[in-house]
Length: 637
Ligand SMILES: Cc1cc2nc3c(=O)[nH]c(=O)nc-3n(C[C@H](O)[C@H](O)[C@H](O)COP(=O)(O)OP(=O)(O)OC[C@H]3O[C@@H](n4cnc5c(N)ncnc54)[C@H](O)[C@@H]3O)c2cc1C
Image (cartoon, rainbow, N blue to C red; front, side):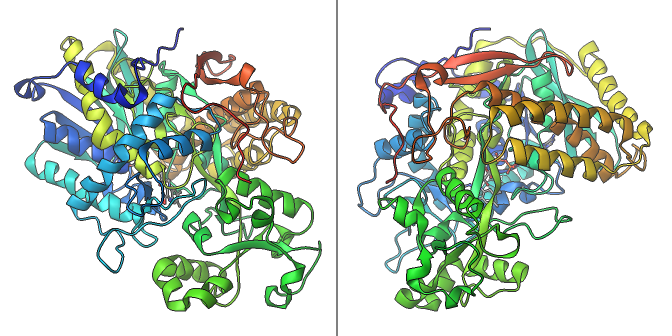
C-alpha cells in the first residue's frame, strides 16, 4: 500500500492556505443532509463536534464517561503552547515549528507541524473568547511560562488546571449545540466496532454501558478523538478509563497504526509506592520553571535532603545541559533520571526517585508567589505523599504519560480508511518520536476547532454516499461480532482477574518497551506477551453479565485490545534499529549516552497493517523529508 500523505506542494508557510483554497466546500444548505459521528468528547472531540455542528452538520457525539466534561483532557495541568510572542522574547511561528520538529527528533511530518504552529495563535483567541480564564500578568495581559525544549516563554496556562479550563470552554460550546439540537450526545456509550461499507467508514457499533444495549449508528463520516493508549502500561498518569479500543478496532478494520513504539515517559511524576497501586500522578512540567532537579553526588547517601550541603549535590541536568538546564525535553530528562538512579544515587524508598527542589525559588520569590503559581499541584503532592513540598523537596520519577503513536492520518487527518478521521492524541500526527510539553492541548484543539472542520467538508463534498441503514449486512455482522466477543469473555470463568492480567502486561511492557529498550528484550517481550494473551483467553474471570452495568466486562474488552497493541509496540520497537526521541534502544547511543538516530535507514513513519491476531502485521513506510529543519544530532547542551 502506498501511503499518500496528500501534503500540498509549495512554500511551507503557504501550504495550509493553499490547501484550504483548493478544498471543495459543502453548500450551507447541504450540510444539514450529512451525519457525522464524533467518538470522544475530550478537547479534540468536543471542539470538533461543536465546530461541525456550528457549521450545520448533524452530529452524534459519544463518550464512555457520564458527561463529556469528564474526559481525560480535564487532567492536563501545565499549559498550552502558542506562538503569540507576547513576551517579545524571540518567539515566532517558525520557532515553534522548529522546536517541535527538533523536539520530535526529526520523526514528524514538517507540513503538519508548520500548520500546527500557525494555528496555535488562533486557539488562544478562540479560548479567550469562550471565557477560558488564562492566567494574567499584573497589567492584564495573558501570562506565559516555559516548558521543556524551548528557550522562549510561550505556554499559556490557568494555574495547574489548564486542561480543565480549556475543556470547560469546549464543553460549553458543545452543550450549546446539544441545546440547539444539532448535536446528540451519547454519554456512557462505548464504541466497540467500526463499520466499513464499500471501502468507506459508514458507522459504528456501540454498547450502552448502563444497560448493555448494543446499537448501530450510520453516518457519512466517523471521527475518532478517543485519546491515547498510555494505559497499556497499566500504571500511567492517564485517567484510569483511557484505552485504545476505538483505535484498535478501527485498526482491525483496515486503518494503519503508526509508530506504536513512540510512547512518552514524563520525568516528573510521584514515584510508585506499592504493588497494588493502580494510578500514577503527574507533577506538571511547569514545576521545572522554578524547581531544581538534583540527587546526592555519592551513591547510598541516606542523609535527609536538607542535611546534604550544596557541594554534595549533583544538579545533573544543569551540569550536563547548561543551555536548557532543568527544561530539557521530557525524553532527555527521563533518561537522565533513570541513569542517576541506576548508578545508585536515587532517593526515597527503593532508590527510584530524584529531588525537585523549590527552596531557591522560595528564597528568591517568596512562598506566596510559588503558591500562586503551583498551589494546587503542591496540595496534591502533599495529600498523596504526606510531605510538605514548601519545606522538603518533592521526590519525582519518570512515568508513562502520553503516546505519540496512533492511527496514521494524512495531511487532512484522514486515516487509511476513507471517511475515518482521527484527531487529538488518537492520531500519530505531529509529535514525532517525542512530544514537547504543552503541545498536546495545542494539537487537540487545532485539529478539532481549525483543521477537521475544513478537511471533513472536502471529503463530504467530493464523495457520494449511498443510502444505508442499520439493517445492512455489515452493521449486522459487526453487531454479531461485538456480542460474540462479550459472550466469549463472560464464558471463560477462569481464576484470574482482568486487573491481574493487565498489571502483569503493564509491567512487562514497562520493563522491555519503556524508558529504554534492547533488541533482545523486545524480542523476548513479544513471546511473553503472546503467552500471556493466550492465558488471558483461557483463564480470565469476568464476573456478572452483559445486560447491565459491568465494569469488569468493560475492562476485559479493553485489556484484550491492549494485549494486541502491546505486541505491535514491541514489533515496531524491534524493527526500528535506531534510537530517536523517546524510543531509546540501548544499542544505539552516542558516546555521552544520547539517542543516536540513523536517518539514512529510519527516516520514516512506520505504519502497520493488521493481518489477523495470529499473523505478523505488515509494515508500510511513509518516508519523511526535511526541507526546512535539517536533521542534526539534537543538542540541548
Ligand atoms: C496528568 C496529565 C497532564 C497533562 N498535562 C498536559 C498539559 O499541561 N499540556 C498539554 O499540552 N498536554 C497535557 N497532557 C496531555 C493531554 O492532556 C492529552 O494528550 C489530551 O488531553 C488528549 O485529548 P484528546 O481529546 O485527544 O483525548 P481525551 O481527553 O483522552 O478524550 C478521549 C475521549 O474519547 C472517549 N472515548 C475513548 N474511547 C472511546 C470509545 N471506545 N467509545 C466512546 N468514547 C470513547 C472518552 O470518553 C473521551 O471523551 C497531560 C496528560 C496527563 C495524563
